[in-house]
Amino acid sequence: AQAVFPLNKSAERSRSANSAAGAMAMAMELPTRPNLEVSRPMQAHGAAKPTSSPMVSTSRISAVLAVAGLARCAVQRRATAVKKKGVRVVEGKEIPWNLFSPKAPYQGSCISKETITSKTPLVNWETCHVIMDHGGKVPYIEGQSIGIIAPGPDKKGETPAKIRLYSIASSAPGDDETSKTVSLVVKRVVEVSGKGWCEYSNVPKGKDPEFPDAEKVYRGVCSSHVCDLNAGDDVMITGPTGAEML
Image (tube, rainbow, N blue to C red):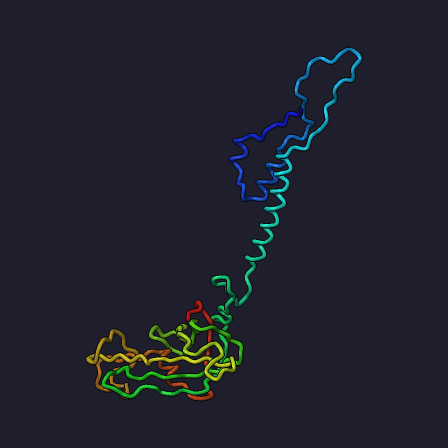
């Protein structure tokens, strides 16, 4: 019979079983000298003396196998953690993500713009349907958004204006099903004092052509940019961003 030295339990608890390095350290601390024999009765005179023979400990085998398994898992985790540019994994599915940033937007163009609402007494009655060409460079899925960068200046005087996100109105292939267009439905933001809520003003008093007598008039910078587009105009696009939603 052979005696096997057990692992030091306190040392074993102090290491993380989820770390390949920890498993390797435990394996290296296993006894490396030949195992000692259990004492036996004295042999008769002239009989061959018992010899000690090394024995491979099952604990050592288990530790080595654990090291190999954890190393494979670590490699797999590193492989799955590698991020692809312009791609994000959502619920196990790769979707396009931030292919174009505010500092490096895609320059698309307006194909068409159509006002799809009729004028009402409300100052913010106008809603437009705009189709833009992205040349297949800005793929997206249903439920995502794109950013539009207006030339500005915005209410803080910044030029170009800060990015504004809009939910995409078209399906992934686009309204023309070429996978080269994206559509937005945008409501023009107009706020006029005395005709509803109006906190800011970005139009000089008396200079608004539609409401010259108003004390304050605020016109949304990016919504006005989108609603004023004509066929052939350039459009600065960012994104896409957001998760799939059906």
